[in-house]
Length: 348
Image 1 (cartoon, rainbow, N blue to C red):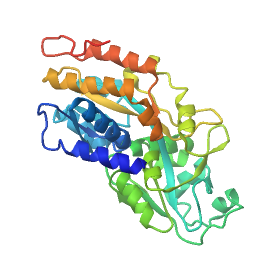
Image 2 (tube, helix red, strand yellow):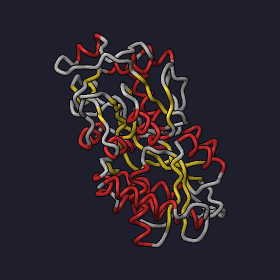
Image 3 (tube, rainbow, N blue to C red):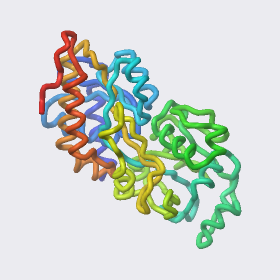
Image 4 (cartoon, helix red, strand yellow):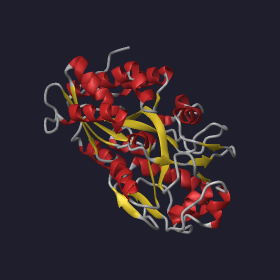
């Protein structure tokens, strides 16, 4: 059912393609991580208001490039920009929704949640140091399941990706070897594996490759009925990816004291926390060349904050708390201005 709803919403978004800045159309581009919920929101918002959202799900790297170039009304990135980069580009960013990045596998006879991995084993798989599923380190963690005697095929993103940024941020925190050899970025030099474009591409690739392992946003894993794994978190507990586990990780976020809303939610403490949790951010220009389009975008985001929580939860995202939404609205009033220096957003 969820997959069907997202497909309907996607058609509503695509209906506005090629009509950039036309009346009643908002344009955005970027992260694939939040695409399922943006699609659902867009469909409902279009039904209620007649306003279309043309959102290009091209990856966070592409979204940052397009908003900097001014070719869209807003960009979207799962990798938050640091305050100095925001200032240099004249941008403001704010969090829109939170969710989880999850490792997914394609192994005969292995169901969702059957396979357990630790942070160091996961890192070494993606480093190419653990090459087979019957490796002693994996079998030691999983004595009750029969792992196939086959090679591991790593599937990673081929495009600049906020999902990759979240995933590599986690690996860099938990694995000194990963931090030294690969690091944390939207696009990295992968030691091994094959690439897929977008969360969609990785999900499709893993689903076709026996022995495959990749990483996707949780909604893509659900929609494609993929096999997720349990991960051992910072507190030493093995946890499965769930909305509750993402919420547990997000509960420690200190948005009020984060300059430019720069908050990273990977490897959070707490026995129930999913270790690869992140937020997705919206990027807009502080100085709006077309304030009507800026206001249309902010009106949509305001609606999503106020009315989108149930849809987000239904797709296993974590909605932003009301207190954070109010904080963000205050930021809009303070920093997003028209050419005369007047606030574009004057709502509550």
